[in-house]
Length: 391
Image (cartoon, rainbow, N blue to C red; front, side, top):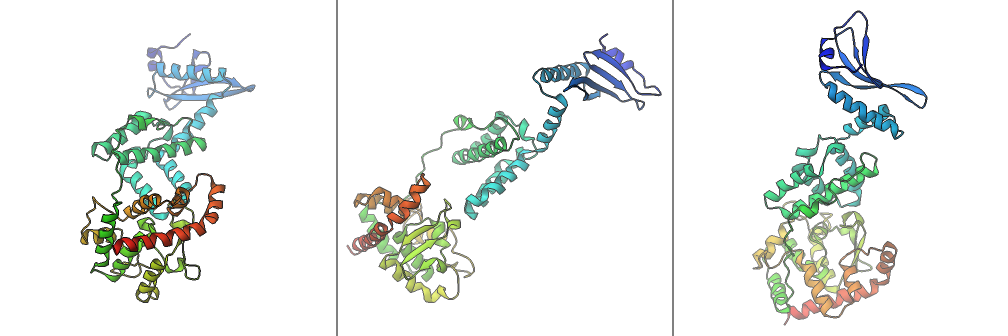
């Protein structure tokens, strides 16, 4: 006979544990301590199994029957309910924070140290305060969207999209690791606001480039900054790669600057042919920093650290070029635009910009194939800048 709530409520403990059946293997166990436990007895692979469903009144008779029904459905599909429950408990111990850290430790070696730190800071500031302790299997699309809406609300739409990508990658890692089956963040980007197309400011008009180069020659600040400001347009690397340039990376014999892979955004070593003009600048600054710092352009405060990321930006402002018109990263756009207009092959320009070839085999081949052409291009570029500057 099926149980009723009144019957369960009135069950009193005895000298021994006893049980009352609700049918089809579901029963309530009344222990000597007075605890009342819903359990399900079933057969799996020819063996008797017991599944604990919960304690009364923490779960009601109705809830126990629902859990009993779900367990029977699992049995019908060939699943052992007890093993499924154990797996669920293990997954619940895998919180978003735990899986995010595991993903980060397995991924960080693919990035530069600076980018790795930036990714983790974004998670710590924008995601972990709300999702860190949540079991990763319980996080829904709505939960993730709620977190991203907080970022959007402060006007950081582009950041919301970038953080959405990071969250999605964490879920993809969790799926590959067997922690869950679906990615609740896979389509969320479609629900976010569209970020404004924000191109980094760069001067590309030859007349204005000439004015920039002439103003650079008139810079009256630190000699280290003066050299870095003149060097930047000649090599057009990323600002971080320039600031952290080390003397050990310079091949004086071959006139090459070889940037180690751990310093590159795409984790691939990059070769920068040095024009005569670029080499002259290195020779100018070597007596100042070559014997006292591992950095070519160290901080103006201490030679033990590289130049700060704001130094070149401030120098450009000092010579009359606002951040809305040109920035240190803009030298890359300047070079790319003008070199293409000068007729240099796009693949050679892109190789020099360290834009990674998606075909890795072809990328390795091209790196060697185009070096001679890049050496010619970099010297031609330096000569072109001299011609512009001198009118």
